[in-house]
Length: 204
Image (tube, rainbow, N blue to C red; front, side):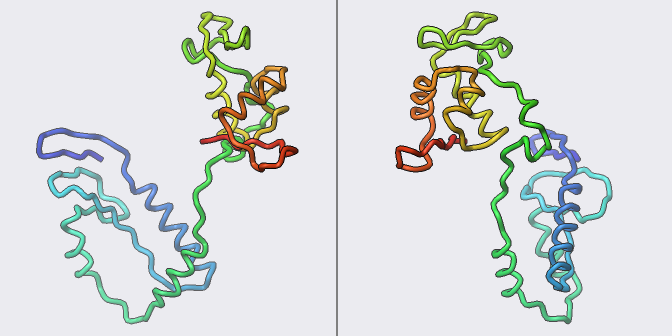
């Protein structure tokens, strides 16, 4: 699909039909699961009124924003009454925030296969080691006090948003629980105010 603005600027991007087809399929399945007979149709609408869209004919109509009202007015009216209030309440009830983390579970990656350690943010290759209150790259010798922050972010996105001192020692490859505790307290927050709580929450 190619969008051309009045200025002549063009942008090529994937046709949104694939994503819309998935939405229509899932919504039809949801209504069928709850024994609701509602027709589900897809329309691709672009908010640009001053652009030209070139696309191949597909499953769904492609409209500009200004064309939507006229298009809907021309649609045949259904005689069957639809309980919109019940349907909207049902959708709200089953609505859940999209949770893409941890990515290891989402993509079926074994946790043991994930590389541990702190990777150098400068050369993006060397393994960093904690020496004299600094992370030092074994490859380019770059030093940093906060290189572990990106590694903790990786842990939160890949494995779990909660982490213990022992888990952080293993993942950062730093066998010093006192240093790890200071790092976690500075960059995360405890799940509980109780002193015996061992879990820290990683900010994502």
